[in-house]
Amino acid sequence: MSAASPLTPPAPRERGPGYALAGGLVITAIAIVIGGLLFAGLLLATRGPGAPDLLPADVQLYAATTPNIGGVVEVDQLRRMLRDGLGVAEPDTLVAPIETLLGVNLRERVAPWLGSEIAVAVRGADPARLQSAEPGAALLEHAEVLFLFASRNDPQALAFLDQHRAAREARGETIASVERNGATISYAEGGEPGPIAAFALVHHYVVFANRPEAIERLAMADGGMGPTLAQTPAFARFQENRTAARAGAIYTDGTPAAEAARTALREVLMAR
Image (tube, helix red, strand yellow):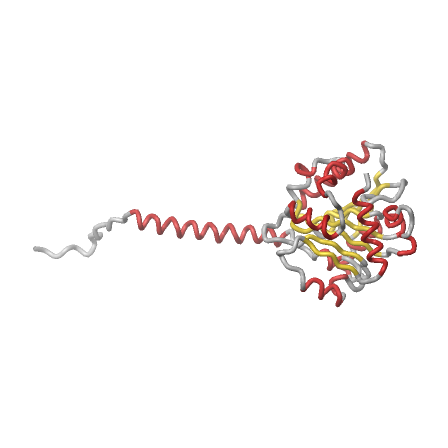
C-alpha cells in the first residue's frame, strides 16, 4: 500500500451542534463587547461636568434625583423626591400644568432625551424677602432659581427647546437670545419673573431659570468662574452619603435662607 501523498488534504472532521453553539456564543460575545464599547462611547460623547461642577459655591438649596445605571429618570424616583424632599403632596398633578407651561407633550418631547438626573438649585435667597404673602413670587423676583435636566441626546434636547420657544412665541411672548461660550441662551423680554423665563442647553443639561444671568454663569463655569458647589466641603460630605437606593437628596447650606427657599420653591412648583 502506497503512502498517502502529503498534498492530499485530511478528511474533514464532522462538527456537531455543540461546535456551532460554541461558535455562536463567541460571535455573540464579540457582538456584546463591541456593542458595549459603542454604547459607552455614546455615553462618554454626551457626558460633561455634573450639575454641582457648574453651579456656584454659594448655592443655598440643591435638590436632585440620584443618577441610576439605566440612564433614565424613574417616575417613582421623581415622585418621591418631590413628595419627600420638597413637600409636593400630589406630584402627578404637576404634569398637566407643566405641559401647558412648556407647550409640549412630556412623553413625546422630553422622554427621548431626558437622562437620569434632574436638579433644582437656589442661590441669593434672602429670608426676610421671602416672609411675604407670596414667597414663591418673591423667590423668583429676588433670587436665582435653576431647573437642570440631564440630556442623553443633545440633538433631541435642542429640538425640544426649539418647539418650546415656538410655542411661547405663538402665545405672544417675545423671546431674545444671547450666545455665551457656545451656548444659545434664550429669554423672555418683559413680563414678570417666572421659573422658565430663560432656557438653554448647557454642558449637556437643559436648563430653565428665572433669569438669563443664572444660565450665563453655568455656560461660563468651565472657564474658571470661581469655586463651585462641588468644591464646597459641606457639599462634598453630602455627596458621599448619596446612594443609588435613595430616590433623591436635598442639600442645604444650613442657613435660615435655605429653609425659607425650600418653602418658597414648593409654592413655585405648585403654582397654577
